[in-house]
Image (cartoon, rainbow, N blue to C red):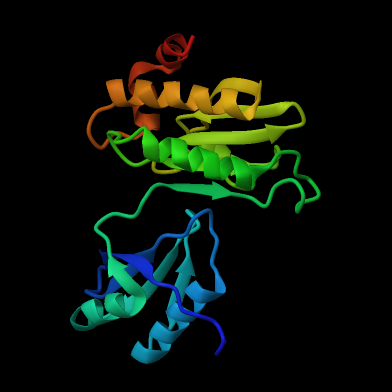
Length: 218
């Protein structure tokens, strides 16, 4: 990797129970480039770190960092952030996966921009875009979920995979890219107008009911 240029990364510190820290490194749609890999590997080698974990949100967690080395490790990686940006989990989609029928990665980029542009929200937003009904990006249990079908996108809203697992409410079916994204914007407006602080979309729907959501989206 001598000819690879290291890339600067952002990292959010997360304190662990044993007093050490993890650094959460955001990735765009799970993409981990050779330059990013070089930065991480050089840092792990320099500070003798041995645990790098891929999260379900397609981010990286660099684990086991002593508190007195935290600032040095962050500087080695790049810059400190207090909050990682919203994430969209994607599968490989059409053109790569033999089951894919929609461009999950292309749609994931568009959805990520929609989520960023329409915030802030009462609490975190996690999204998933799956290129077929195998739902490899866990779209059915995300706040926003898009599932590819041969005739377009099914749109789900309010899924959750925390303490109270629930599937998202299907708010649209067989939609084109622009139609699906416009519907997501309307659903996010409903969340911003009605959600309580630190209440996920699933909690809002549990509190108000699915009919309130569907009525607002008519």
